[in-house]
Image 1 (tube, helix red, strand yellow):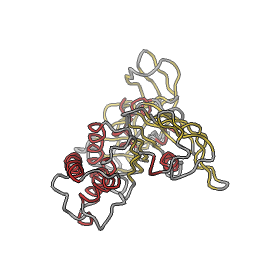
Image 2: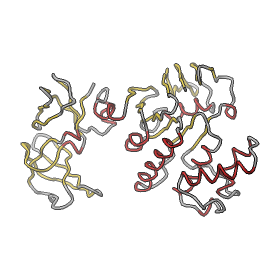
Image 3: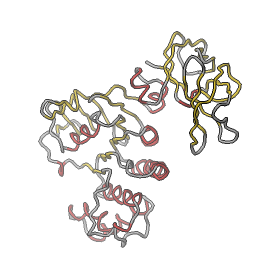
Image 4: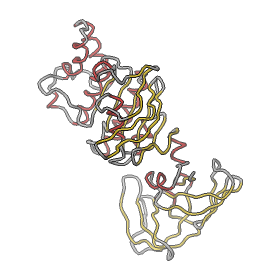
Length: 334
């Protein structure tokens, strides 16, 4: 088990990570989620041994790793660009860590074949890595990191250089690979979908500190404060009241069975308001077509809000619409 205790990392007068505590249990995947510059990659590098903390301790199974160099920590690393060896073929890249450990050739060949099949690249062993697509190269990088059976896998924005559709598909594959291998992993990402797809728990970071840790559904439904809620997509935050599993606010009322009774602060993501039959009236002032819905900007007369509509028959700019709350796009703060 990984345990990070009160880690602080400074660059001169700049404190990049401040007094962070986090644990990753055996077989668990934890995502460090936050905007660029919040300190998540610096924290990952401190765990790897690539940055020396100004204070705090990184432990594995209770053992302080402060004096353990990077190559002796038994951790695997996957970065955004993969950092493959261009002069080696796919099999040579995957086998590199095994060769460094003196694993016999027959065992290396078997392990490489097993991993290439696991990451969906069976039969690619003799290919040059320079001939692969970006997604294929990241699969090779993952296989190479997993080959020596690391006790912890560290992934730093591993999918961010890929286009959206490929990133979504590869995130599903990566989740499958990590679970099937029983890998303990710490992932850095700024992408909500990626974090919630891959992680057993999500740690939200900002300003060098962890603001909230919890299961993906807990963090998504119950962001700890307004700043965290806005980072998680809640563009509007309003006062509301919950009674017997039903929330009421200025946009109407809707069932929210998991919400606690009482006065609350309600966060609305763009999907929190949908076109069709609701109590709020407005005029469409802009629209953006997404793959599976149309995102609208609606002027209600008292405020401008985001809303969504189905692709078929979505209202045009200038159309009058009625908006209703959608529980899937709501969050309760705190």
